[in-house]
Amino acid sequence: MKRYSKEIVVLIVQLAMFYLFPLSAGPTDAMGMVLLIWLSTVLLGMILTVNSNNKIKYFYPVAIAVLFIPSVFIYYNSSALIHAVWHFVGATIGVGVGWGIRAIALAVAKLSDKNKQ
Image (cartoon, rainbow, N blue to C red):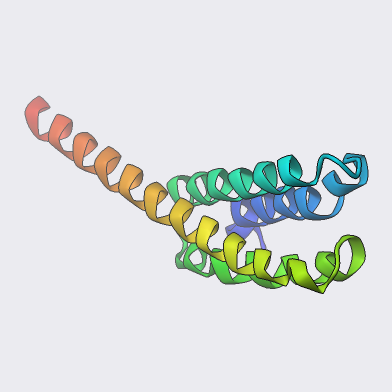
């Protein structure tokens, strides 16, 4: 369990966004709430990818899409099921950007180590 502690923390934050944030939104705040949750999904995907060394990070988009589905039936109606796809896309974008940032950071670190020698 300790091996996946970073991934678990990110999933808990994402679950809080899915299930606690809609409680504070009013009926006219729906579009802003959806946008904020989607942007947080992208950001959390980037954070997870940059900070994690485990391959389980690549399952994050699927996990997010699946974890969002119950919130549709709690807070929204069935027409909001399409948002599970958007969360999958957002998490995939976040993981991809995070992977790029991580690759660049590792290349720069390797280059600076090479220059020191």
